[in-house]
Image: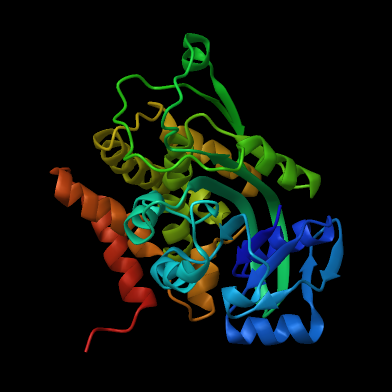
Length: 343
């Protein structure tokens, strides 16, 4: 199976390099600066357990790369529209997109931009950062979860409907993800021609733990709950996750942020566990010594994904008639800290 990794940042650089190292035919679609670095010195990953360099096929034009069956989107959520436009010349019914972006609205946007293209939803559980172009420093975890939002034409058995899915993320063993009744059906999308188990095998063959989730949107919302808490809080306190966990007052703040996320998720048909806020705190104990991707982006002078995390909750809350005052404040503070004032 030919793969194409779009982007070689903290996420795509790590996963893509591991796939290439394992012998998977994985090419890279890259921006000019990263492309020049990869061509000059290769793509390097520095982890606690190992460091290595690979020399993948790479280009700034998807038409110059081997035709892929699976395209993995690892760019920031705000780059999605530009990337889909760039990929249009090579997209077709036999091309499947796997999205690893943060947030919960990527699939819907892809359906708008590229109708008829099969999509696999994914969640990346990893903490890594770009030390310099084509050099990735990997600190924590490196697992993924994948799934399909809908499988048209397939009827699940009663046994499958009642089955639970065990999903393990980077933050903790996420526990059993119970199937929720009366969930609205996502808009129909083509069934991926690539079997999820085949994708799982590719990742695991490269040493990347991969869980196939029967309720991937719930999995995405669980990570969303973590993201809307610790990504902005590490910026606001200018410190690591551990500092946010250390103060009882901040734990109350965490619960307020998550409670609003739960209300929006419920309105969108996703029922999260009543104790999800406590689980977010629990999951964070294992990675309490990290910063976050938003913190790293801020310090590097890059745009943050606040509009697709807390900002998404605010926009959807407004549309759905749900008040999200805490997330409104968080969003306003992050924008004030990280973005230039409008002119």
